[in-house]
Structure formats: C-alpha cells, structure tokens
Image 1: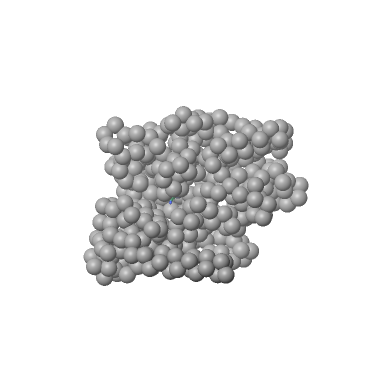
Image 2: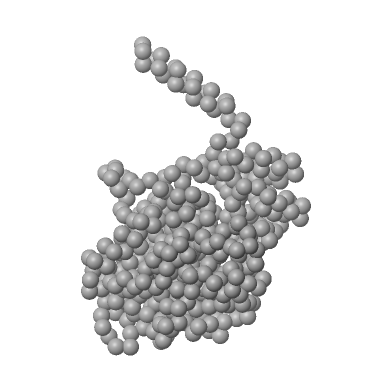
Length: 422
Ligand code: ARG
Ligand code: ZN
C-alpha cells in the first residue's frame, strides 16, 4: 500500500514537471535551413547577438540560402531564439533536445564502472589524463616511443608529441599527425590516442601498419591546443580557439587554423578578435602554431606526409584552402583521398566527401595543411571525422571506435600510397 502511494506521488510529480515545461531547461542543437535572404539575415543576427554557438558553418558570413545551419542554443536563450524564429516564420528542427545530458555523458569517467565495458580508448579524456597517458605510453614502450617537447601553449602548458620509431633504418621518412587544434572537436585527440595504441598493438599483426612503421617514423601531437581543450572541460564545451588574450578587446582566443603563414588573414579569416575565425596579430603569433611550424621546418627533409585531424562533417581535404588554385600534385592528392573515401564507404558504409579545401567547403586561409604543403610537405591532408551533424561536436563516446577505425583506414591508405610514390 505504501509503495503504491509513493508511486502515485512520484507519478504526479512527473506529470507536474512535464506540464511546467513552458521555459526550456535544456541546451539544444537546432538545425535550420534558411529559405530566403531574410532568413539568412535573421540567422546571422541570432548567431551574433544572442548567446549561442554556431556549429555549422564556422562563421555567420557563410550562412546562405538552402544550406543547413547547426546552432547550439543554451537553455537560457532558448525561448528568445525560438520566439524570434517563429515570428519570422523560420522553421527549425531540433537535432538534439538535451545536449546537457550528452555533455555529462562525455565527461563521465566510467572506468570504475565494470558494467560500462568500454575501453580507455573508447572514452574522452581530460587534459591531465592525456598527459598521464603520454608519459605512461612512453615509459611502457621505451624502445619505440619517445616524448618530444615541441613547445608550450599560451598558458604555458607543454606541447608534447610522441615519436613512434620502430627501427633505425637510415634515411627513414616520417609522417606527422596533429590532433586537437580546435578545442571542441573532442574526437580528434581521441583519434591520436587511438592511432598510437593501434600502432603499438598491431605492429607485426596488421600488414599495413607494419609496412608503414617499417618505412616511416610517426610524430603524433595529441593536443595541439591544450589551453582550449582544458577550457572545454571546465568552462565552455563549445570553445574552438586557443586562450590568448588580446590587447584591444576583452574577446579571447585566436583560431590556430587561421594563424599559419598561408595567404594569412585573407578572405575566410577575420581580424576581429571576437570572431571564431580570428587570425591573430600576425602569422604564427601564437605559441602553439609557432611550435608546430618550428618543428616541421626543422624536420621538413624527413616529413613527407602531414595530417591534421578535425571534426565534424566527414571530409578528407587537401590544399589549397587559401586559394582556388590547384596544388601542383592535385591529381595525386585527389586520387589518394578518393581511394581512402572509397574504402571507408566499402568497409564502414560511411560517406566522406573529399577534395581541395577551398572548393569543397570554403576559403580558409592560414591553415596548417596549406602552410605545411608550401613548406614542401607535398602530401598534406585535413581530416574532418564523424559525424555529419547528428551529434556534431558532441559525438557520444560509443561512436569513438567507429569514427577512429574509419579514419585509421584512411590514414593507412594514404600513408601506404606515400611510401609507394616516394
Ligand atoms: N573546418 C576547418 C577549419 O575551419 C577546415 C580546415 C580546412 N583546411 C584549411 N586549411 N582551412 O579550420
Ligand atoms: Zn576544426
């Protein structure tokens, strides 16, 4: 009887709570496709004037008719934003009704929960955990893994790369992979960890990775933007840039992927520190981009393949993003990206678009891929991992293995081709 009573009390409470939903209590992701120029203007206005985070496109200037916009709307501005949309008859679709829950899920460390069944590599990790993992991986594999300090961040955190070197052949070539240049793209650092773990576990078991590691050293920088990454764990999950302070405004952060010396700060980047695509005060003004650039400059004779890992949208991009001109080896790059995308489609039934950056998405000058290419690293790619917008930057941990395995297949495909060609 008492249980029954308690049941009713709770049931009624639940009903009451549901009825009380006139104010939104949850962060949401909306998908909106503007149909007219007026819609475009309204969306630009909302994404700049209200407390929201534009997920796609990267900057309001790229919002255009008949193209999906993904907008993160925090609970406290949800009502205002939906009101505005309704008043102008702009229809929207709720992609995610409860982003809070997803964010909570991603920061939960359920390693102690025996029911969780997910491995270390199938979860997201805090910056501290990643530093710990770097040390531990080097310590446990002293003959194959070395830690290289390539520089430090604006807030003076170390930038560690791992060097995987499985033999001492002379004249060995190398590839470079960096992850986490954009703070909110969490699956990217997860990929770098995945790649290192896979290399160490499957050498001499998987033919492709064995051939790659026999012929190349691999430099892996798991978190290029540690200050931003830390900030996404503690303060704002949607942060993209680094955390450097500007002399002229209170807006913080430079887009590190607009800070390299490749048609720096031309169309597709901004001099305004308050935008998500702020290019900084001059090329390599930021310690993070400078560290990577310095390292690659001093290793350009060995590094033949440059890879930088982002999310989301499922794309394999190559130079140029800073101009419509074709790269001198465009055909090679296209062929490699195409083969990688085909394999992903065949083995994982997932679609990856591919092509030169500027033609495939938008102008994005000052990117690391174009800069590395111009330095002389003729095989240079930007990967945009899963997904295509369903979860966006909030890809659930249960999707990490799928996302990483297909990206790994692409890396192997491209690296094998590079070895073949050189
Ligand atoms: N989403 C990436 C960005 O906006 C695309 C990078 C493509 N390559 C480039 N060099 N911008 O940074
Ligand atoms: Zn990115």
